[in-house]
Image (cartoon, rainbow, N blue to C red; front, side, top):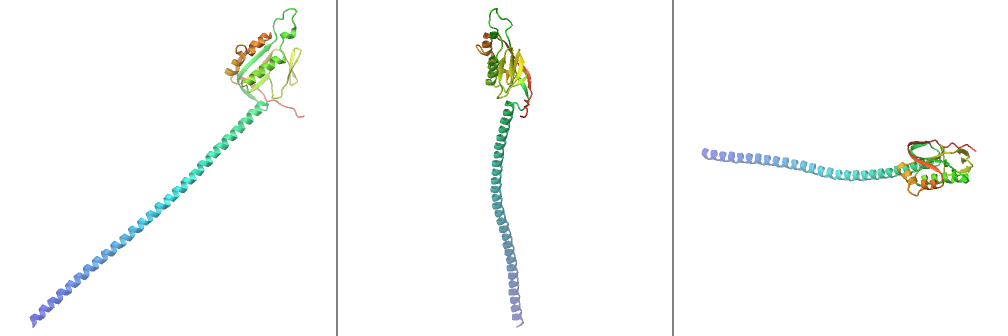
Length: 231
């Protein structure tokens, strides 16, 4: 009887031990599974966050590109407006220089006209002296060749200047000037001088009119602004 009880007790203990071991193993596996599930959830959440961040970054990059494009357009517009402004300013300065409101200086040429040194006996004196037409020819040729400003005997000409011959003197805008007459011009001397010296050109024509003429380059021609009196 005692032997049977011992066997039964051993069997019960064996079964209990098995159950305890199985329960422990199940608990361990459940804990491991729960931990793995939690880790997976964290990884999934992190990946989802990264995807959202990438999406947000792309959105920000697109907005940045659009803003940069607007900035470039604004810069181009400003450059264009700046260029137009400077063009207007340059044109204004050229106009002011043309009408004589500002003083100017620069390289250019000087053309000197003198009456003939010899008048044959019996010839008309008027055929051997400088007239306004001769000065006009020089002034017009210089302007046509690109002169920025022109003066006669230091008196600067404007868009409405007049030149008139009064015997041995020439009147420029009401101011009389005796011979010789020096026509000064500011501009490219390598253009102005050849335009005068061309074969059959103005200097040859003046020489045929018995006018003594010379033309030279000048490194610095200065002209003061024209002061107009108030009416």
